[in-house]
Amino acid sequence: MRSSETALHDPLADVLSLLQVQSFLSRRLEASGSWALRFPDYRHMKFGGIIEGIRWLWIEGVTAPLRLAAGDFYLLSHGGPYCFASDPAATPMDGLAFMEEHLQPDGVVRFDGGEGRTVGTGGRFTFDDETSGLLLTSLPPLVHIPGHLPQARALRATLDLITYETETVRLGGAAIGAGLCSIVLVNILRAYLAGDGRPQGWLGALTDRQIGTALQLMHDDVARRWTVADLASAAGMSRTSFAERFKGLVGLAPLEYLTRWRMTIARNALRSENTNLAAIAAAIGYESDTAFSLAFKRMFGSSPGRYRAERAGVAA
Image 1 (cartoon, rainbow, N blue to C red):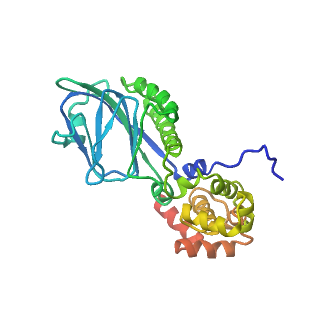
Image 2 (cartoon, helix red, strand yellow):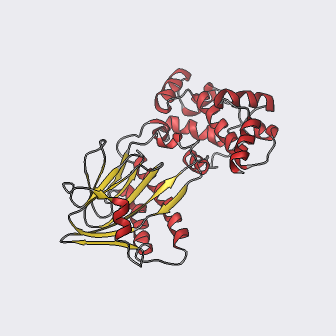
Image 3 (cartoon, rainbow, N blue to C red):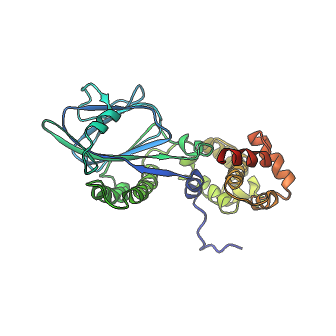
């Protein structure tokens, strides 16, 4: 029996661990004058932080120019071309070529185009493609975290470290940069969840007191034979109200979500472990590897054994 003082699993941490996040800190850009840069499509997510001055950011054909001040962070999850600028009326230049042309020996990109200095940096995150949808579909194309907000406190502290780390090339910079990016990702998501508007989908459901409790319980004991009645009771709701609210927020019925999460865990295990199918099945609540194999094939269209063999062939 679990003690009431024992912390439940953190579903966000669970998902991030299976996403196999790879983080990269980008070049620092110090620029003045009137300029605008356009960047092409990218995979998964990009982020930025404003160290000094004012910048404008927009996603082509999706968002209007957004004014960013020193201390602000943003997260892009749209994947399409975007621009940032000191002047939203300026004609955008090729951002990648610009960064390469103005890169200095100390690793900083500098451009002197006149009055008005702005400094910023950013980075990107790539994930396991097969798992990325759970997070990406819960986010708007652009998340803006103003630096003055109370929930941005950890980001402000991280920006100080990023400012120091990007001033010049330092030993171990890639390792430090990746770590800082990971801290930024979690804290942008935290700040976003703490905002006034509830996010859509699974991510937003985490902030709901009742449905969030149910999600934590399922993640905490994924092998348990949960029933909708069990989860509704833990959430302090009637079975019908709980089922309707869960599906309305998460987009899936409670036990459908549980099955998908179990299969996601199993798929990760098949890629990264040599554990036999019976052990994987038991770990996620199936009494036999046959029952597990049938459920896996229904969801992914391939048996666990075939999936593992195909992934091993890709890795080879």
